[in-house]
Image 1 (cartoon, helix red, strand yellow):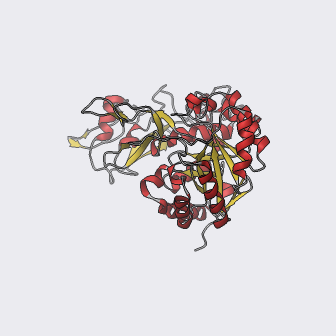
Image 2 (cartoon, one colour):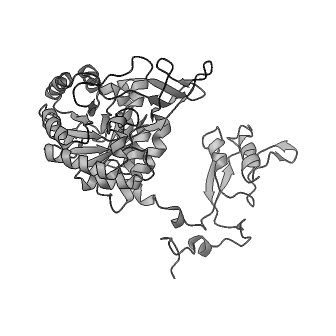
Image 3 (spheres, helix red, strand yellow):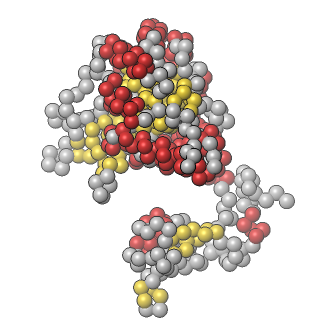
Length: 434
């Protein structure tokens, strides 16, 4: 079987596949990155470098976790700062890694003060190691903000543009700006990065969060000597937020030409497909590697290759494929009608669809038919919200089907082909114009 070619070039940086490790604990030192490249990862963003003297992290719990009911990690919170190793140690290891792995992407993440002299000093020093590019960390939500770095920069478009300009003046390799999600609208920061000369953006960085409290002491968890702080939230649970922000940049006229490196909750190849189809040109992974180890790259590569083979597509053809389908609510066709259909052969009669619909939706699913326990959709009451599909534990048991005949339960009017095409809203690109 011929597997799809996943060799990629992102900003002219070549890598054997589009899966890079994000700047985080897995890329803190040469030992980790060597293991990652041996496992097959296409690239790595080195854990964020800063000025000397180096940073001091807490000596105690740095992570907290959100578990599913079966104790699967679906959310992760961390309070770890940028690298706490001496800058020269990092520089020496960067140089060695690039020498040993010339075919892999190696990008240096950096975080520096809002001082042009610092960028002029450190950017050339780091570039001299042979790194392929820089990623500017404008997103760290915990720590460093009190020093005017991290999210303190990423939340102010003017600062983003200024620091990006300084980095571009000092660097001869591509510059990626990493954006924070801790902001109301992702487009102004993305546009500021573009205006500052950024070659690409990466997103999302972690989200401000406190995971829980300690139920014995009733303090937040975790704590260091009895005190805790908010951290950065990541993992599977943040993927929908990340996808929305990636899509917003990819579909905006002002930023659609800006290359995107997608980050946020990528755990399997399907997650990667989501990011590519919504506009990302490569992806970065952290939490899944920390939970399952570097060998997950096998599933990512094999799964994506197989998917592309089945679709008879190249990776370039997949990038942005779903972007034209993303629009604003007011442009949706309000006369398009779908209703739920329950496959009785697959139904296990658990009743979850009935309870959800009866208690919290539209009372459109029976629980008894002719004296027997049976769950059926009442077409005239169903509004097509698909809550039942969401709560059903059997994959494929409940599906949504377009209704082309019958009566519209909202108006009582017959459904016609003409009505299905008509939206009436002047801003709807699908509206009937004849």
